[in-house]
Amino acid sequence: MPARLSGSFGGLTTLRDSKVEAQHCVWYGECGESIKVPGKKYNCNYTGPAVPLDPTGYGLLTELCSGYDYGDRRLCCDVNQLNTLKGSLQLPLQFLSRCPACFFNLMTLFCELTCSPHQSQFMNATQFNGTNVVEVQYYIGKTFSNAMYNACQDVQAPSSNVKALSLLCGRDAKDCNATNWIQYMFNIENEQTPFPIIPTFSDVPVSGYTPMNNETYACTEGLEDGSGPCSCQDCSKACGPKPVPPPVPPPWTIFGMDAMTFIMWISYAAFLIIFIAAVLGAWCYR
Image (cartoon, rainbow, N blue to C red; front, side, top):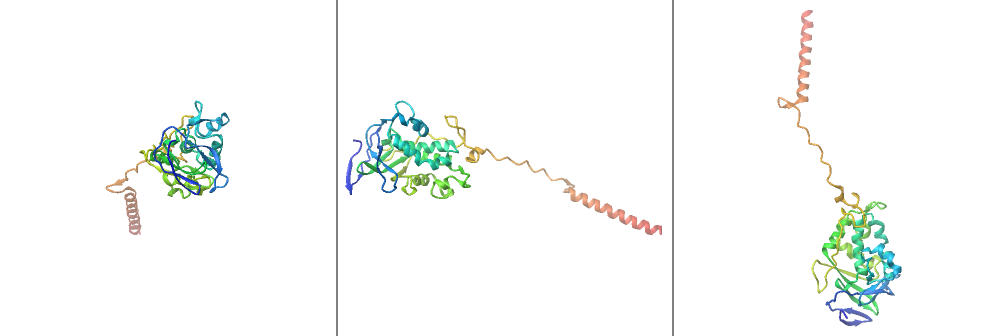
């Protein structure tokens, strides 16, 4: 067994041992229905090795977590969990898929959580109710979370005329950051997460766990599948430098005076001289 169970209260068991063993699962399959979020299910407690995915789930795996679509596809999730993952991400998919790099990073966050064959390296099931896992701790790299946020922060939701994170972060986009966005997505108050997922952010090992710090893509980068960079509308860094206006030409002067003013004064003076000469000429002629 990878960890020691101790203590219980009302059928709820708490996992307190911080020592982890690499290369095994924290859960596998779905069990009872969530008490806090009706219609959602808990995952089943399982601390064995990863299990080959049923071939009926290959298409889903390719669609959602293509990074694991190789070999015999040994994972810590089954087809039901993949279907649940797909259903839970329909709203982010609707908005964030506009920016391939942003959505790829987000899917990495959830695919590692749901299916990674190395879950015990960065996850700790902390509460159980029978065979149900009812709370987990998820160790996430600060570098990863910041890169994910940076790739998504400018993505627009044209139908609502706001940034997508205003609809996905539980607060206005200007108040959203990498930490509170992930915390909101993993909070049962969003009615999508069937049990609490407690994120811990660190770039160094914590209590024997190595935070998930997978590769990310910036919004200015294309993906290996051929997807291009995000558009300027959804990624300010993709817009390039703003055009520089031409330099202002030096002022036109005559004898240190503004040329137009000098010409007007000369013209006025010439008019006065001609006018006075004409008046004097007419008077002398009479």
